[in-house]
Structure formats: structure tokens, C-alpha cells
Image 1 (cartoon, protein in one colour):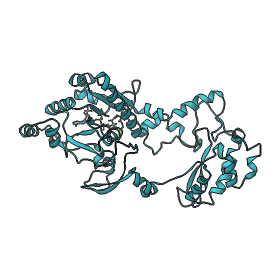
Image 2 (cartoon, helix red, strand yellow; image 1 turned 90 degrees about the horizontal axis):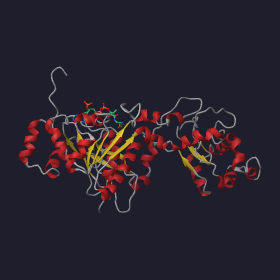
Image 3 (cartoon, rainbow, N blue to C red; image 1 turned 180 degrees about the vertical axis):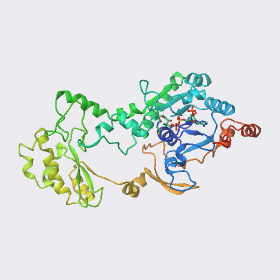
Amino acid sequence: MGKALDGVRILDFTHVQSGPTCTQLLAWFGADVIKVERPGVGDITRGQLRDVPNADSLYFTMLNHNKRSITIDSKHPEGKKLLEELIVSCDVMVENFAPGALDRMGFTWERVQELNPRMIMASVKGFGPGPYEDCKVYENVAQCAGGSASTTGFDDGPPLVTGAQIGDSGTGLHLALGIVAAIHQRTTTGRGQRVMAAMQDGVLNLCRVKLRDQQRLAHGPLKEFPQYPHGKFGDVVPRAANASGGGQPGSILKCKGWETDPNAYIYFITQAPVWKEICNVIGKPEWITDPEYAKPDARLPHLKEIFATIEAWTMTKTKFEAMAILNEYDIPCGPILSMKELAEEQSLRDTGTVVEVDHPTRGKYLSVGNPIKMSDSPTEVTRSPLLGEHTDEILRDVLKFDEGRISALKASGALTAPARSAAE
Ligand SMILES: CC(C)(COP(=O)(O)OP(=O)(O)OC[C@H]1O[C@@H](n2cnc3c(N)ncnc32)[C@H](O)[C@@H]1OP(=O)(O)O)[C@@H](O)C(=O)NCCC(=O)NCCS
């Protein structure tokens, strides 16, 4: 079956996480992704957090499925020429080098446009134009600079980063959307364009509701926050612990076994339309008509007591038992699932959201597949490439080099690591 991005060729100059997540998604949609890597070394993540000796790490393999790898020394004159030819042959170029690195290689946006006016040149950077534009940025820096850390955690504790990689994978997602939109626009304009996604901007976009709350503060306390009514509000959005952040109050509550199992918890939302059912389930039918509890606004000052009462009930059930009972009444809730539980969840295997992939040097491993499902563009997850695995194939099939040219290029040293001096 065909794929949504069949015929789109991507020059993938990305490394670490943010850029690779973007190009992996595009590969899953059918794009031919050619990952350019530094000879001898490759993407630094190949060797980071290694669990199996001499094999590509899970860090690398889980972010680079369905791609081809070519090694090119971009600082070698012949390597530069080769990259220019690839720029002419590709539709999209994606990179997430530190600010200025691509310009230093000689591939400014102006130069890329000269080479290929249809080129869509997409970049992830830590920050957009402004005081921090020259900074190198990693995930947690973006979470801090984008407003996530200041709004995550408990009121009496320090700012917290979240396990979800909203700075890296989140920005990769934003960039992928920009690229797809640019491909669509090119069908009418015939021109490529520059697509930029700054990690600070991506995180802030995902923290949009917190900027909402910042402005609501000017009109009084945030009544759904745990600080209300007993705590104090200053002039910045405080950390909301596990409060829901939406119009329906929610909290994480202990379940049976919480004393020993760090994930024996459930998220419980006291959604207004099912208040009657909630009261009946937890054994508080009198709250259905009591004016102090009957209406959402009346309940706000009592949320602490309400959740404590609900928790006294959830603690008598496992998270799955509680989930089953609450679902019968359409009460929104969710178990706190561990990575182990997610890895073992059959329904996620059935949909391809969790997939088992085989790899020649590391064997079988689990990965997250494409979370976006399309009826006419199915995803088959194939393993990540070995370093330079497709170098010859790309030179032959994409650039149409003959064997003589390939040999000459190899002899030039542009495809291999520069020899190291004894002093290094
Ligand atoms: C992630 C980041 C901090 C890593 O920094 P880093 O490891 O120092 O890597 P850089 O991006 O600075 O690139 C390093 C160098 O490798 C060089 N390089 C990359 N590919 C090469 C190749 N194929 N051949 C030769 N040199 C190559 C670059 O030219 C650059 O050299 P220069 O600094 O001499 O010009 C940085 O790339 C960054 O801030 N990126 C943007 C934001 C981002 O995506 N962050 C999240 C990453 S998950």
C-alpha cells in the first residue's frame, strides 16, 4: 500500500532526539529519510546510555527507525560537494545543530536556496531570535525555559521537569507539522521555505493553559488549584501538584497496595455531570443534595475533603478494580501505569503503538511505534540503520554515481573519519 509521503526525500542532518523524532515520523509516513552522519562516530546517541556492548544504544535505535544512513565528512571539500548534490536531490533538509553550525559548514539558507529553490529547510533550535538565540539547548533546559518546570511540582517543593520529552520530541512534532504544511504550500507556489521550531516556543505552546492561568490570576485566586482556599497566591502561576488544570477538578489518589507499589494510584476526575454517580459509588449519597456539595462552585472550597473521602474508597480497591467500577458509571479516571505495565499491555501491541523490532547487533527490543494512525498510510516499523549502512546504495541509487566515482570519493577521505594525530 502507498504511503502519505511517498516520493518525498529528506536529507536528515539531525542528531540526538528532537530532530530525529521529527524525521522518524516523516519516515513512518513514507518519506525516504537519508540520515547524514559523521564518519566513524555517527549520531552521538549511538554510543550513549549503552546497554549492550558494541551495539547501537536503545537511545539511537528507538529514534531512528525506517531511515537510511550515509557517512559524510561535512568539513571535507569533497564531502561538501557531495552534500550539495544531495541538497539538489532532496525535497526537505532537517537539522538541529547548535546555532551557526550549518552556516559554518557553508549551508546558509541563501546557499541552500541557490542550490535548490524548492528545498524546505527545517531546523530545531533551543530559542528563537532574542537574547538566548546562540545557546545550545537540551530537553530539560527547554522545559525550564518554556514554562513547564515553573508550573510542575508541589507548591512547597522545587520546580520539576517531567518525564515526557516535551522539549525534544514535542518540538520534533511541531517541526514535522511545519514541514508537511510547507510541502503542501509548495504544490501551489513551487517554492521551498524555511521552517523553524524553537524548543522554548514548543514547550510554551504545550504550556498554553498555564499562560491562561497567569492572566486569570489578575481576576482572583485560581479556585481549582490546591492552594485554594487555604493557601496564598502570589503574582505568578504556582505549581498545581496533581490538580487537573481544566474545568473539572481531578487528583491522583492512592489505591490498594500503595504502601509498596509506587504506581498503585489512580487519577480521578470529579466531572460535574457524573457527580451523582460519584457520590453513590463512594458511599456519600447525601452529597448529591447537600447545598455545600451539590454544585461545582459550592464544591471548590471542599475539594481537599472531597478527594480525601474518595481516596478512602479508592484505597480499598486496586487501580484496575477502581477503574472497572468507575467506568461502569462513565466517571473519568485513569490508572497510573508503569513502563513495565505499558510494555506488557497487549492492546498497545495490537495497534502497533508498542512494537518489537529485531536488530542485527542488539537483537530484539521494544519500541514505541507510530502513535498517529492513518487508514490509507499504514506504518511498518523497520530497524534503525547501522552507521553508514546505505552509503554506497545512496550514492548509486539517489545520486546515480558510477563505481569509478564512488571509488574516487572513497579514496578522497570524504566518507571516512579523518586520521587522528598521535597527540589526540
Ligand atoms: C544538541 C546540541 C546541544 C548538541 O551540541 P554538540 O554536541 O556540541 O553538537 P553541535 O550541534 O554543536 O555540532 C557539533 C559539530 O559537529 C559538526 N558536524 C556535524 N555533522 C558532521 C559531519 N557529518 N561531518 C563533520 N562534522 C560534522 C558540526 O559542523 C559542528 O561543528 P562546529 O561546531 O565546528 O561548526 C546542539 O546541537 C543544539 O543546541 N542543537 C539545537 C537544539 C536541539 O536540537 N537540542 C536538543 C537536542 S535533543
